[in-house]
Amino acid sequence: MTKNDVNIDEIITEDFVSLQSVFDRKRTKTSHFMLNSIFPNTSVTTTEYFVNAFLDDADFKHKIVRPIFVVFNIRKDDTKWQTIIQRLRAKKEYVLEYFAGIKDGKNIIIVVFQVPSRFSKDYLYFKAGKYSKFSEEYKKLFPQYSQNSKAQPVESNVWRVINKSDSLKKELEKYFNIESTKKIGKSLIFNNNDELWGLPELKYEIYRYKQK
Image (tube, rainbow, N blue to C red):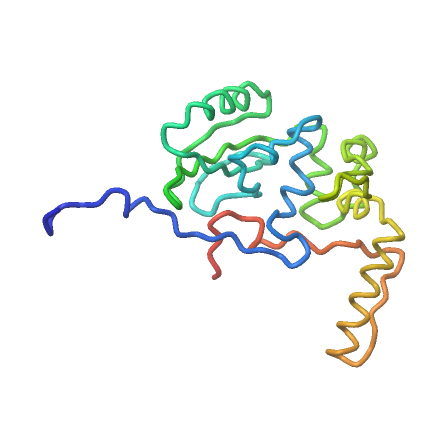
């Protein structure tokens, strides 16, 4: 390569690293709480290509109402992906898809869906961090039990957040009482109006978020 040659792969390489919340781990709150509005009976998160879901992409201009941006990593020339993307395109909530760069030798493909209008209030409640205010119809999309690493049934954390589970409240009170006492010398206790999970923060929920 001469000094005038351009390495296209270097130009389109995406160096963005998604930030992680302590409690949400590798998944955004959008993944935890809003993907069920698009995939109520099957989980897109179980595919080998899934990375995360976001409320927006800072580098993509649009006027889409109630969007969900789902990020996938695809190996080049992976024929199996074609079957997956055809199924995604067939969903009535599908809006569009686009290439968003290369990371670790894989193509980043973002597929945008629109949360159905019947869940529009739930979408707004989510953005406000009012998880317990979700409609009964939407709450029913979240199973109470999931399986742990030993294939044993355990209460889903997301279900516990939405339903303000007493067990989760006690666990969080114990954690925050210890932490707050260390930091400010007094304990913090949830009251009946408090949600049990934090607000969806932009730095976690927007892909390629840029701190202003």
